[in-house]
Amino acid sequence: MNDKKKLKQAINALNRIMEAELAGVVRYTHYSLMVFGYNRIPIVSWLKGNAEEGLQHAQKAGELVTLLGGHPSLKIGALLETERHDIGDILRESLEHEQSALELYYELLKIAEGNSVLLEEYAREMIVQEELHVDEVNKMLRQPGELAPFQE
Image (cartoon, rainbow, N blue to C red; front, side, top):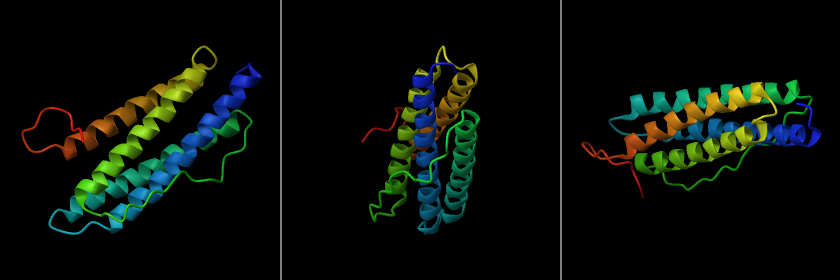
């Protein structure tokens, strides 16, 4: 990436992604500890999987920060605790988190377009993954037989 301004923007965007993904690790880990009831086992497994995936995403973003000559952030994104642990509440908060992450990857794509094929491809790949996550959570929030996307 030759444009120094774009380089700095890309590093900042990657650090924000890393922070958000790390916040997701904490969020999903916390949620996995707070699920009770008949469906606990598959939901906890799904939440733990999301936490593990978030850590991998954070590590990848950090690797790209150093590839670009930047310093990976030690910060973590916002951790909003609603104190509500109903599965529906957890899923709505998860949907919000996934949508926020998706926006960050779109921001990176905008910066990378025409400046770095590597970052463009990375952003596109992550956008696909995050859009699938959003869809997955959206489907979990729907009532059985409901085909229209979930909306609050």
